[in-house]
Length: 309
Length: 107
Image (cartoon, rainbow over all chains, first blue to last red; front, side, top):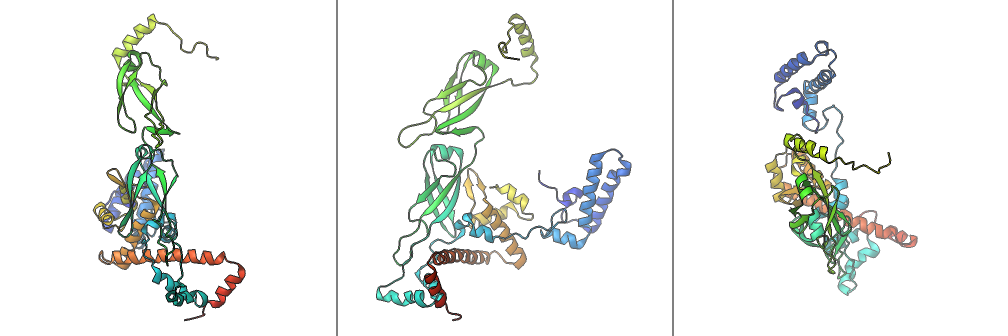
């Protein structure tokens, strides 16, 4: 749970006047004071947080600093955040204009070095132009589990108004890097451009998991389905399919849907392995309980027989 | 990696409508995920940057793309510059010395 703001602690709006804040504090302080709540630690804890919130908000200077985000709810300085490490880190590439740096820009910079390299500028006309290959650019792209498993086309937005179209091959792994030739920084003076390197991250799925080329799924089944057998619909990464649950299936039984795992481009495919999980459903079902009592009486069995104690 | 709602909790005073407009204007480039958006660390930092620029410099929305564009160019040039400096640093000592000598004290 997110930390409560001091306004929330006192139950006032962020626009509340000093008088409203004082009134709210007095009301809460009367209710929560430890002297009238002996032996109630939760009241004491709330009294402390109410007092701390009031200390902060009753001081106009502190309140203004809190509102500006300079201090946190405990009154501690918030670290002055900086965009620069992000801009210069691996994630910062997408905000940096693509191909913005042209030959003239570079020669201006080189001329700062003067002498030998600055001469490249003059040499250019004489066919001795300075050439520098473009650098690679790094990007990250997060794909859904199903997109990673089944393959997908994704679009990566770049500043200020371009994008990269990325084809995710089926079965891509977490952390795998796709290389788009020539999509990095352009080269200068006829030198080749760099590549775009796209690191793929896979968002976890609520139900599916990967094991190599196989996909694992826990499938809830009812007691009736497990005992009597059933025809059920099972989600796969390429859409729902029908599956038969055999009569008398135990919880934990694994069923294999052949070819429903990762489809490799070469034609080979993994399987989806479905593990049955018997769910009882309603916690209190008198009809089922009554039936089982009678049934168990007639069928005494110990499923733990043979287990070492 | 967080969603739009989590950013709104983290950045007091930022409204959903406003943030969605920034995304539409491409000031911030989160990734599309189904119906929603995914913000990476750099995107969250950028949202905070925009909020800070607006608050501290009382900058209006028309000037914001200009400021962001210039900032992005500076960071882009810094990367290029560092790449060049790294290349120089990898040269043999006599080449580095020649470059140092060739650097004018002033222009």
